[in-house]
Length: 261
Length: 248
Image (cartoon, rainbow over all chains, first blue to last red; front, side):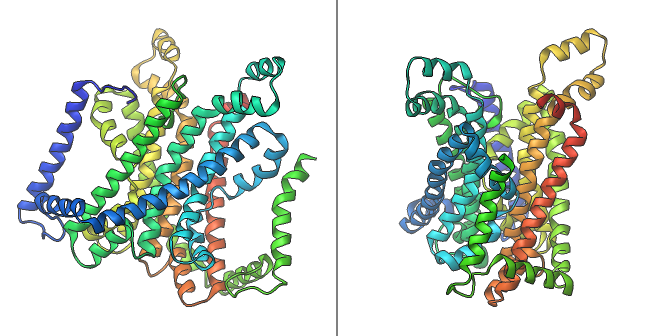
C-alpha cells in the first residue's frame, strides 16, 4: 500500500475489479428488472457527474462541505496535538485531562448537535464545532500515546547537551511523536467527513450532504448517486493528502498499523 | 493525590455549571441537577425505555453483523494471499468514504424502515474491524509461525493457536472503534428518519421545545455509549488476560 509506484499487476487488478463492478451495475440497470429510479444506468449517473463538475453552483456546495470539514479538523489538529503532547509529557496534565477524555470518549458527540444548533446557530459554526469535538478525541489519544513513548535516551542526551525545556519539546518530543500524530490525523479525517455529511443531511441548506438528501427527496436518484460518488472521491482524496503529507514530513519512521502505513 | 487531581476537573466543571444556572440563562440550557431530575422522571414514567429498546434493536444487529463479518474476513485476508489480492484493494479504497452517504441508496433498495439503518450501521462497523483484524493477522511474528510449523502443528492449528491470539489485541481495538461508530451512525440515521429511538427523541423534543426530554435522551445516549464501551473493556480483560498481565 505504501509503495510509491504500485506494481502493474495490482494496479490492473484494481482497474479490473472496478470494471467488473461497473459492468454488473450496467447490466442490472439495462436488464429492465429494476426501475431506473432504483438502479439508474451508469450513463445517466455519468451525465449527472458531468453536470456536477461543470456547474459552478455544485462546486460551491462541495466547497462548503470541504471547508467545514477541514476547518473543524484543523482546529482539532492544533488543539489536539498541543493537548496530546502536554498530556503525554506531563503527569499533572495527564491526571487533569485524562479522565475527562477517557470518560467521554465513548459518548457519541453527534447527540449534542441539537444543543450546538441552539448555542451556535444553524449555520456553519455549529457543524465546525461538532467536527472539532469528534476529531479531537482520536488526535489527543494517539498523540498522548506517542508522547509517552518518546525514547528516554534522546531526552537525556538533549538535556545533557544543555537544551532548554522548550527546545527539547520542539526538537525531540514533537518529531518523535510525529508518526503517532499523523496516525491520529488519519483516523480523524474520515470522522470529519462523516460528521460534515451527517450534519448537512440533518440540517442544512448547502453542502454535499444536503445535496444528497435534496436529490433523493426530488426522486433524482441518478443525481444522488453522482453526489455520493463525489463525496467518496473527496474522502479518498483527503485521505491521500494526509498520507502524502506524512510521507513528506515523517519520512524516517513507520508505525505498524494501517493508519501509519 | 493523583486521584484527587483526576477528580478535580470534572467535579469543578459540574459545580461551576450548576452555580452558573443561578444567573439568567436561556431555556435550552439546563443545570446538571435539573437534568438528573428529569432523567429520573422519564425513566420512572416509562417514557424513555421504548426508545432505548428501539435504538438497541437497530444498533446491536448492525454492530454484531458488521463487526463479525469484518473480523472474519479481515483475519482470512491477513492469512491468505489470494484473498488479500482480491479483497484488500477494494476495502482500502472505499475505507475513507463516509458510509452514511449510502443511507439514501440503501433506503431506496430495502425501504425506509429499520433494515436500511441496520445495513448502514453494519457497513460502517465492517471497516475498522476488517482493517484491524487484517493488520493483526499480518503482524503475527514469523518466528512464532515457524516454531509452530517446526513442532509439527497443522495449518488449522497454527491459525487457531498462533495467528488468532496474536491478532486479538488489534481485533479488540477495531471492535472498540466500531462500537463507537455504530452509535454515531445509529443516532444520525435516527435523526434523519425514524419514528422511534433515541435519535428520534432528541430531534422531536428539540423541535417541540421539550428541552427536558432532549437532555434526557442525550444523557441516555451517553450512558449507552459508556456502558457498551465498558462491556467491551471487561470482555477484553477476560479474553486477553495474558496480554493485560504483560502490559502492566
